[in-house]
Image 1: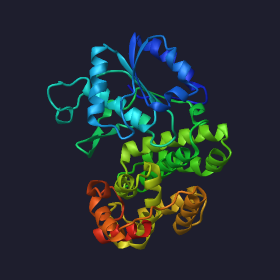
Image 2 (image 1 turned 120 degrees about the vertical axis):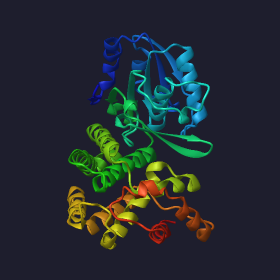
Image 3 (image 1 turned 90 degrees about the horizontal axis):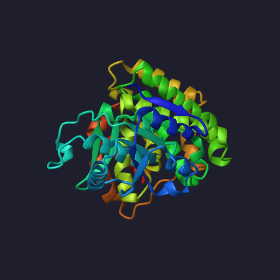
Length: 368
């Protein structure tokens, strides 16, 4: 069935009705450590079904963590999954749903992905990845990032209750919001963009541009509702197009300098955009450079600027205002080589301008 999205402050109250409508008697609650502090905690715990709690995973969840969740789901004979938390909690829940239909005597990552038909309800507690509306999940196996993708893991219900953002730490609000903004921009210029994905991107970027000051600096409830919706739009856009160079370049920055994902992506985006503007001869979008120029102009207008160059400047000014800075390296030359060699070429192929290895190094050179 098509995903049902329920949004607005207090919308979490709808979850009881959803549980009753699908006839669930026992559900696995996948949540992170923030759950006990959430305003929606009592609402979730008072659902009209038995809840089996699973929170045994890290912020960068391991395959082994997911396996424990699968075992608990099976042994407890749960019928549905309720995910409450940030992107990691929702990703774990997605993988538990997918892996629970597989044989447990073989690595789940090596088996065929099939729809288990297990109902999945996602309640995001940050406004960032939009994971509650995507077919993607990320876990780690043997120290390596594993990207899981299957249409069946898009949650059946996404509940966007902005009240959960009220007590979110300020730095986390900044980083997650910037991740949503970057996803909106990247999806817009992706070679895989469609009319549908561009409309989602436009909604995401516009809502963030109009509400970020009130959301970050005033903790305004109406702005929070708009930013949460923007993050969801950015997730829906990325679900169609996938991410591009800024995301591809962010992952090693996160692991090397212990930066949150949104922080790492945000410091990559302006350098990538500037490089693409300066190298139109490397256009890799089959729709041509005129199409790409229009895309860049449209993004700039959405950011309330008159040109892509002004948009890049405004983005960098925003990073300064949010105090999202670049990392300092103790061994710059060595780090540059490691970073340059780390970039996933598959993600780069989604970018509308080809960025060769020396271009990647040039961009990193301005970051660290």
